[in-house]
Image (tube, rainbow, N blue to C red):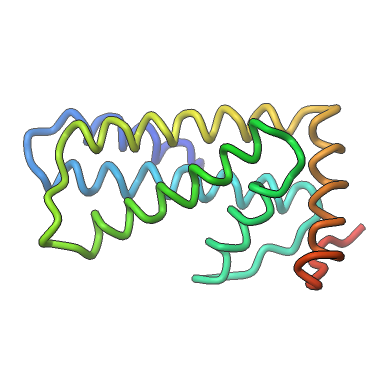
Amino acid sequence: MNFRDYLTLASNLQGGATEAEWRSAISRAYYASFHMARLLLLDLGFRVPHADRAHGYLWLRLSNSGHSETAIAGRRLSQLRRERNWADYDDRRAITRNFTVQGVQWAREIIQSLDAASIEPVRTQITDVMKIYERDVLKDVTWHP
């Protein structure tokens, strides 16, 4: 499975005419970003937890990566998760096309930032800073050589 395909699906759904399509677009946009973040951290040598623990794990490390674009991607990932929760669980909150377009755009920007973070020298820089963040702040080291 190529999780980038979720972003393509989200882009298609955002053009739909129903709130169900817009809600689905937000959900797919989030999961495209989530999985690309998960794959990046796995590739950097971090042990990403499974299930619901993975969400906070990812955005916290990205937000504290020491690299401004990657940190913004982490904060946006957290916000996009909140929007995904609204779209998937809150039937009282109206989800509009404009809201959806913004969410899909954020996912696109998150993934672009993650792609840039996978290339040297940023790759080594964020890995080193996240390792220190785990050790000194979180007291939960998940990086392994």
